[in-house]
Image (tube, rainbow, N blue to C red; front, side, top):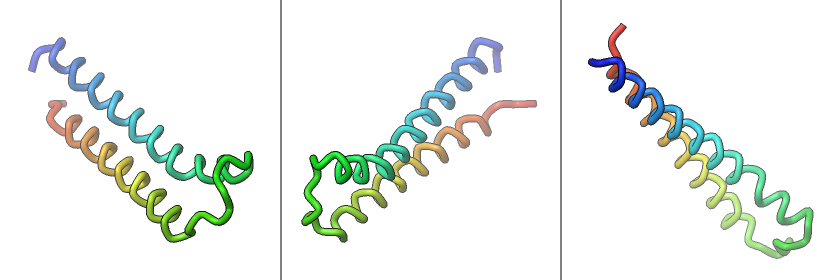
Amino acid sequence: MSAAKTEQVKLTAALLNSLSSGTILAAMVAPYVGIGMGTLTTTTDLLNLTGLSGFGFALGVVLHLIARRALQRLED
């Protein structure tokens, strides 16, 4: 694999990992910030809130695993 292609793979993996971190952070923190600021009512169904947070967390994990798989293609 050429040096340019290696760098492209590394940049793509870094982008996916950054998206993963942002997705997990937003899924875990945003609901609590919304409740604290009063923009999300406290009568919101807890199961719905937990489910959406869990979905965001799972999506972040999947993005991270895709980034790791992209890096596995690199040679030593």
